[in-house]
Image (cartoon, rainbow, N blue to C red; front, side, top):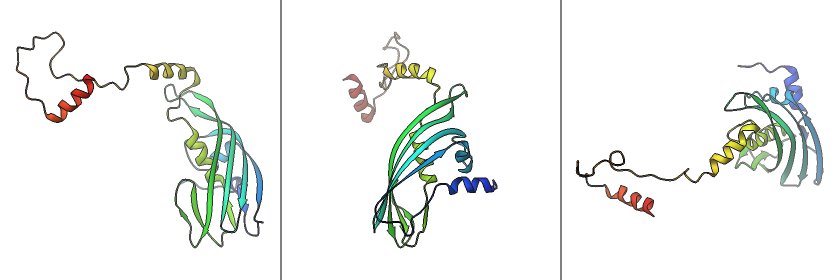
Length: 192
């Protein structure tokens, strides 16, 4: 278990927004984040990066709408070579915090927060949005053209059915066993 040092706590406190007594109207916030943000999040996905967050908070008597716009870059490790590279990020996302009697996450975009909540911390939302924006396969930019060419080939995803030995063998050597009707249906799909 990792001990949270005082600077980690202070780093995440920058993302606290006091909503107690906040007027029911739109408010705007700016955050600049770097390596300390990723260290304080106690995760292993991203270690380095620089980005800015513009947050528009719209408060009403029943809910809070948060519109995030994040711009910057993070350092990732290439899945193929384990070489670090910079990945640009430009993310726009939205969260709704609805006031209720208890705290609960309803969906990816909607959470219930208790009526007596005084402060919300948006660091977790920011990190989640960055994490979701990252590519599934983390490839250094010099390999991406190769991947796109591989994806364009028409052979991928094609079902090939073979029910015998190697091509060119004499089919009369062994009688074919009867084909299960389920496999026959798949064979018909392939023949089309």
